[in-house]
Figure: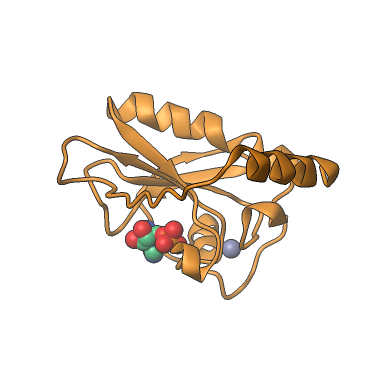
Length: 136
Ligand code: AMP
Ligand code: ZN
């Protein structure tokens, strides 16, 4: 299993630094976020080290969301955000893939989101669709 000696989340998986562990399986590890945005804010990570989503093998990725779901149910969160940041400009601070499960109990706590929607047009969307589909 790929791991990086310098990675803080790999150290958590190995038990070299402590965490508030919620779940562990062969491929997945979950623990409480140390600086929570709300009560129950948790992180679900693959044991396989990789900085971005595209660095993680599909078999590991496939096991992450069911654990996120388990944590939603266990925390009793009714409203919540699931977030996975990739790259500094996209707000990623730890370079080991992690899914945040962030309960949203009220307007103030939990994730605040800016949603700067842009105007587009049907021809633009059509060209973009063709471009992306041609590369899948
Ligand atoms: P991101 O900005 O998506 O990279 O989020 C990194 C998250 O990891 C932040 O919410 C941090 O509070 C959290 N974090 C960093 N170090 C630890 C740690 N040792 N234990 C638990 N959570 C951590
Ligand atoms: Zn790592």
